[in-house]
Length: 543
Length: 92
Image (cartoon, rainbow over all chains, first blue to last red; front, side, top):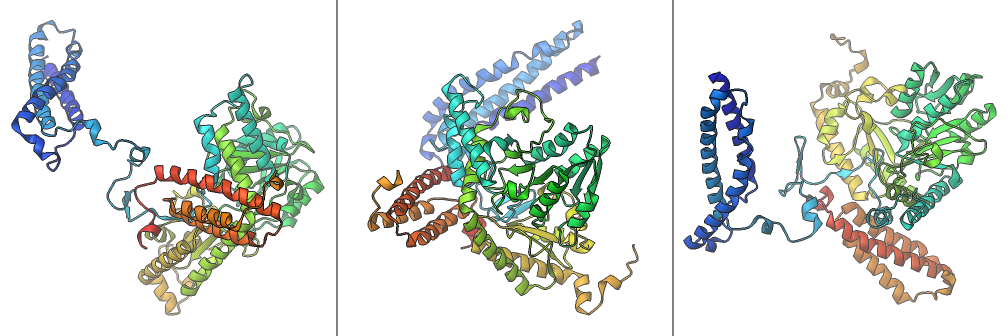
């Protein structure tokens, strides 16, 4: 019995103790340099008494509800119980006193410490004020230069400028039909729809806004197959597809559909004859991505579209990485469905668009049921600011495509030549002709990719897709290309975009070359190669 | 609409060019700052050969609206500027 009591008082005490530092934490710490003149006795005294009475009140109030917590079912314990709480209140009181003294010593009131205005101070708080950043155990002098445009791109200031009004005053639900707020939002959404449609030479009626390319891919692959499930049982896709298409296919497989994963040639492109021969009478969908996210190769879209037209099979393409970077024409490509994403074209994250052909009409089973927005294909309120951002980004992409393309190609050449001039054993993964210039996927022989990335903390790059960058496994895309295991492990994807500068490229080249040289110096493999030993001929005892 | 606007004078064009470059400098973000500078210079160079008064006027109004965007966004960007600068701004 006593033991039990002791335990409860102990926990009570410890609870109290846990709480008290919290209270004192809010007090400003005593800074000796501040206001030394206010530390005369009289001032301190008055401050002391006033702050004591102030600070005691909340503490006492806080203590009051505690006694009812004490065990109700033990009548004879009440005396000792109250005694122990008294004890703890005494302790509390002394603590409060100490806190009050501490507070009185620094006479600033807490609110005066903060700078008077500017949101910047409040927003930038997560970063420490010392020079450099320390995150995940890595110390960097400044924000790394960004070369990972395939993962996501920064929002263009012109896009943000178009979005901000819809975050501030035009907050209406675009589906509200009864007031101005709804009307103006609806109008903005429709303008954005036509902006997206213009970029891909489609009709605005064929655009459905979604949450991103992943959702588009899910609607396309699963939605089409579910809709035509009576007649069509077969899907053709490629091995180098994005994870969300492959996963949707796997899901279909579990439901009894059959999937053909087309292999790719060593340049990352599919074999058109192989595609033609794998088409069956019950093939319901061909899904091939336009620009690969990891290696940047551009599939022969027009030819694939032609084959699909010939066999009258719906053709879906994931054009998230292609939008705004290469010219897209849904009629030339003959696509029935196309997935687009906002944040790869300097737009906001969290928005995408699905192109759905109207003639001949393609139908899908919706993945989400609800209010019937977007013609019932994607229920849920359309996020006006994001959609406006995507529209603005598409319009901008249309204007800037030529300019960006020229520049990105120039920077890519600068980077590749810069690296090749100083390093041997550098391989560009994927086709060199049919590729988007802004994606440079390189493998550095005799270097371990993870160590290279670790050493390149001042350059924001990745080894492949952001979705799989957490795993140490080599990329499945590179394996599908038939890249050797050791080369697949050392791949780095440099993504060049609209805002990349020559200086950044030069810096990235310099840092990469230095790091590769450093790692090669340590590598026994590289030493052996230098001595003329063929590594492939070595029999490793562990294998 | 654009045809109704009289073509801008040389002084006006140079003033717009300078204002754009000035607002570019206001961006705390390294990449945006450099891009704004570069894009301004490149588009003025591209439009150098324009001779049709209406297209000159159109380009001028477009530049003016871009200046407004740049001015607004320079404020937004500086409000939310991270305390730690880009590595490109540090080692120069």
